[in-house]
Image (tube, rainbow, N blue to C red; front, side, top):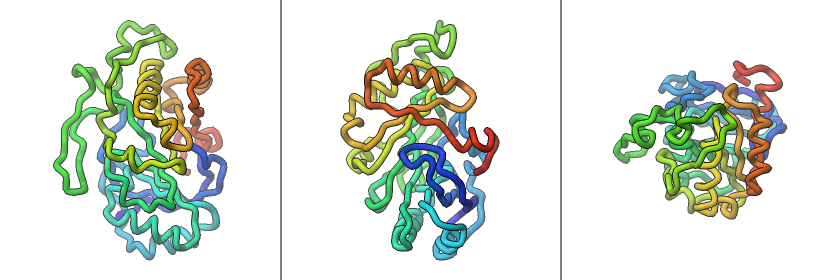
Length: 257
């Protein structure tokens, strides 16, 4: 499998935030989010490393949970086998994924952390690496991917807006909803109130709060203040949790830790 890096740090996001963690960052991504903070992992670069050697690197890096991430880690066909091997080695394993590819091959003992993209995070061809044909998706109405259609006329990131009804996330495989359990978690990265409102509406429409153990909303780094998102969460009266990237507070926005 193609590996970008293996390193030990503190998990900065989600339910496992604060835990020492060995990260395995696999190469390649099938999306191009406008706010991506790991562009070096997007392309199919990385070092070809046998699965057994990846496990050895994780164990040698030190104790703690393990997070298999990317890019999009499930583009690597051996990713589920890697998760299985890490579990067998006694590690708690979390898989960070965008949910665009089938999740059913991931061992249920692992925790899925699914980053569901809003419809405006990306536009273009979604490359399928699992035998399915690639498909092309666009932001609604031809709107640029970083400008939600319903933001027109807004005066700032806190401006109220109404999200379009019944608009599904075009980059999420809906069959994955049946794979999610109370062990798992979902997050939404938002840049304005419109994206936040959309996330709330979609999450409620698919019963997400009853499917998974935690649903997070958090700011795209540098685009909006976390306190603003916190206020929106309080206003929503939904069982949302605030997600912030603690590793960036600790070591700066450009950190690779």
